Each structure stands twice: as C-alpha cells, then as structure tokens.
Image (cartoon, rainbow, N blue to C red; front, top):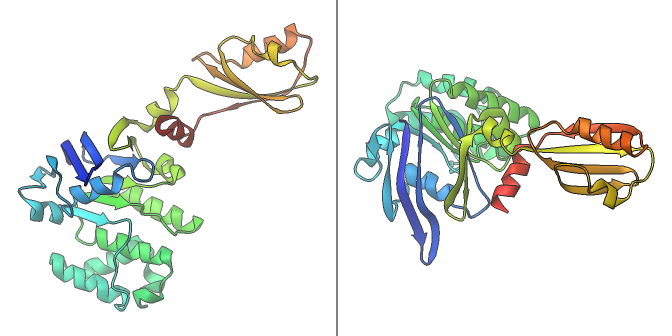
Length: 298
C-alpha cells in the first residue's frame, strides 16, 4: 500500500476534527478526498505529511510510519498545501533551485518540472509577479521536483482559469500513471475527470469510500424531465410506479425522480398514452457526483 491510515483521531480543544479514520490507497490510484468545509480534510493531509501529529492512531506512507519515521515520509511525498507557501521575492527558477538543493536532486530536474506544469512563459519572473494560477503551478512544480512516489494535493486547481485547469488536470492524470495521488478539491468536475475513487468525509468521519463509477451508479435513482401537451393534475402524476418525488417545473413540464434500476422512460410514455396525453419532450438526467455529495453530507 502507498498510504495506509489506521484509526487516526485528532481534536482541537473540544472539537473533534478526525474521529477514528481508517483507509488504504494502492500505488497508482488517484483518490479524491471530499467533504464540506471543516470536515477534517486538511487536518488529515497535514497529518499524512507529518506537519501535524495525530492524537490517536498512525499512518504508513510507502511503508514508513508517520510517527516514528517522519523524515522518510517527507522524502517520499510531494505536498501542495491549501495555502501555497512561496517566497514571493525569489524568482521561479531560484525558488525551485533552492528546493532542488534541499532534496539533493539534479538541477536538470528544474527544467523538467517547469515544462510539466506549463511554467515556461513565466519562469524568469519573481513569484510575487505571478497570477494566483501560476503560483499554483509553482507549488505543483515544487511538489513534483524530487519525483516523489506519493502526491498529496490540497485544492491544487485553486485560482486556475478553464484552460489552466485542463492543463493541470492532465499533469495530475499523467503523474497518477506511476504515482499515488491523494487530492482534495471542492470542484466536483475535477474529481469526475481525474479520480478513480472517492473518499467522502463529514464531521470527522468517513461516510463513503468507493470507486467513482460505483458511487454515482449505485444510487438506483433516475431523474426524468418530461413535457406533456396538456396540464396534468398532481394526484395523477403521483400514481406513476416507482416515483419517489416529482416537481412541476413549468406549466406542463415535470421533473420526475424514480428509485429503481428499471428504465422508467417507457413507464412515462405508457402513463401519457393511458391518460390521453402526448409527450412533447422527454429527457433522462444522470445524477452527477455533486448531487451524490449533497445527499451524503446534507
């Protein structure tokens, strides 16, 4: 296992940030770590990177214990924290050269990570002159500098424009081919595009740990938006089989939610036929990760 978390708990005074957290991640997995603000995401990431120590439990990173061998853990991790700490008075290359000396890596690696993260156009500027998006790139380049086995990324796409998002997404996906990537983000589309698996934490406890496809598909819920040619009474709509909720969006248009594996579009067509109605349009909506996340953490 690249990461193995064992019964970790952490409190700040009377507030329990993490409550007996356990999970493991295999090499090559890209895992999204999701949760509402204050759920404990950043606390766990700081523990895995040895910035914080747990009150109880431990974790192994590349088979090194965070409590007994923190230096070995630090060397095997590339970390981009939520609030990316940078020396604003240093030039980009100067900053990366400083960290290359710390990690004792060849200076040629600097050009490699600059190319990987798309920093080349801004690489001769001071960090303080860069936009927020390019500062994120500097942080990511620094995390990749010593070619670590594990990347821990806390909100890595903060401040990036749509084009930058796509570029950094591809960098993370490429890194995940031979590294373990553990990332936290509030952008659900990024998780859907990058991650193989999702761990959701709420109030310090893990509430879901599943493959992304399984998490979205196992809800057995489908949403159908249908427009009839005449107004339909609510009491009549409520009689459709497997219907768990319904909403009149506008005049003759309804949003129908079903809880079943069965494709309910044919049932909606039959309902219309049996009641002398025509369906002017019918669309099936797939539940996305954002909807699942809201349900699990509400």
